[in-house]
Length: 117
Length: 113
Image (tube, rainbow over all chains, first blue to last red; front, side, top):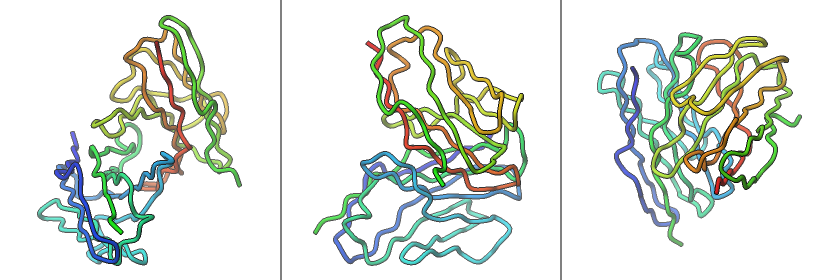
């Protein structure tokens, strides 16, 4: 079974600086998808970024980028120019490329990010 | 476009009471799921459906029932609430192609006394 591990329960960053959140996963599959979701205090789950395992190029979305290391099974999220609105819980998630029961998201336990003004 | 909607937003139940958490989506998604979120545990899958009339269990299904009579709706039923079911519940939906992004509802906070 696949697992997702976020080893940093809490992180802190100064406004305008850069922070990297770590995520590792375990799978025997070669084709899969990885996601980072943001959960602000409103509790809404918001997709930040998505990565297809078959793509070598790291995904980017404005100030958010990932460092995807397939061999190491690592999927870290880098937030550049941190803003106060980035303060939230961040979840890393894995989704198999297969359907059925394997098609659901498997989440890490989350990293709580604080942004200091 | 409402996306994924959930009702109620907050509910208090007494032990042994039953209730239904509603979930609806207007994106014509085949895939729908229910997750619960507990402190320090991330989100865990309760039940899911790959289409109308088809449901299956996830990681933590005990104490919950689901049905999927239409593509749009996927209600979650608590038959006899227990304090251990105090949690935040999220409904999510996605298309059925591999790796499609799941979109989440706003969540329902449930407190069982």
